Image (cartoon, rainbow, N blue to C red; front, side):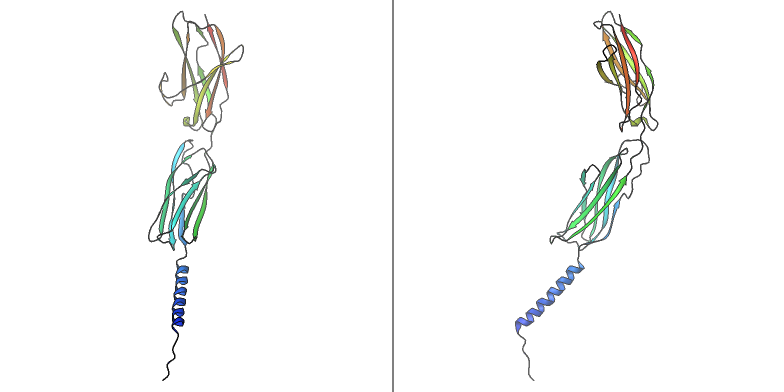
Length: 256
């Protein structure tokens, strides 16, 4: 019987070809892709109309196919002001992954959260997912100046100083927490020159009797060296979104 000898290089070539075909098949099987993925929250609806900072948790979860020990991942969330926040990402050996972080939003702001997660192999192969969540801020209203309490005239003391108390009642149709500031501007009645803008407080301190009751307070004083004068007092209140109350004006006389 005659045997046919096959050159060694032919055998090696066949082995290498089979190996390459198998490697290619393995690469196809291990192609980097998402098997499942989700992002939370899918929508944001505030339970309260109060405008304030609130904390939510944003998170990715899913399973990645074809991931290896060298697979790198990055997850990001940004808002309409282009502030980008990285999320802490964890990729397990079985391909499951998660990425999460707490995010502070203001309930009065309308924005769009844009989320992206991306994995990349050393070869450059990538798997990427993007989504967006619209956020509609709650409505706001302007504060209302309900009443103003202060003396119409104050006599200059013979010596020392005398306190003058100013109290204004402010309301807000949604919440007193939506009131950002209450001010009183002191103007010279003759020249209309400003003598200063004073901030009133509702904190239960420095002469304010009770915190967060809508009555705002400031105290000023005059001394024996003050001269008689006439003043206009302009009152204003502003909400956290910048809406202003209808301004009111009162008068004050400093007399001998």
